[in-house]
Image: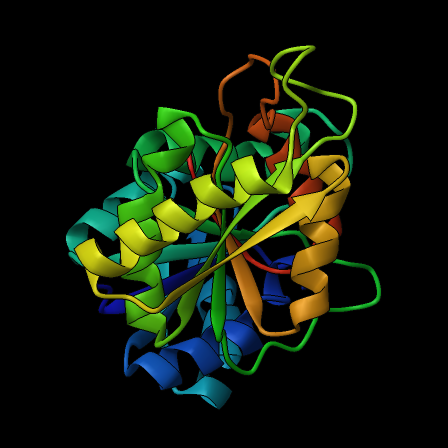
Length: 268
């Protein structure tokens, strides 16, 4: 699936937090690890190149230093991805609030838009990164919408690449019911996630399991992922807005903020 993991760095310690985990993933998947520094015309390119080479050396990574284009940093990252097919971008976000752009960071959001394909985004923390030596599980939240389900093939391929299994999850919100006369129940919800998990296993040849969570999705999903210790998330940025909907735009933002794991995310 992926042959190269590309980690953009910008000179900040926040942007560097993903390198150790990315290096471990690259080793586990026998993929190339490349660190990319994009510089503009006002910066000292020689110093920037030395910086990225020093970061790359301990991990046996490729050091790349390219000039920013007139279109901006995101366009330079996009072009580097297209230069080497099979490249997955993994980058940090500085997001701290609930707004989509603030959560993803302007550059990360621009990269998502420019690429039109999933990107791994990790929110950095002042107390440092969470050690993730191996990703054993890919958690895929589904809300019954076609949009959330459109992530199924990509989550399956990601899990196969990582040597992981997929956990399909859905959330029952106690305060929301489809019909006043038909209470939401574990029986209804488990039938849906069980069927989607079986479909993924049969169609994509990946090991799957399923879970029904309870509560507010913005809290239940991050809490569940944190409890696993070896997981990452695969999500679209928003789902449908009807009853019992998982408003995955805001859910994704909360997961980035609170789950403390990388999120494999795609814009619709």
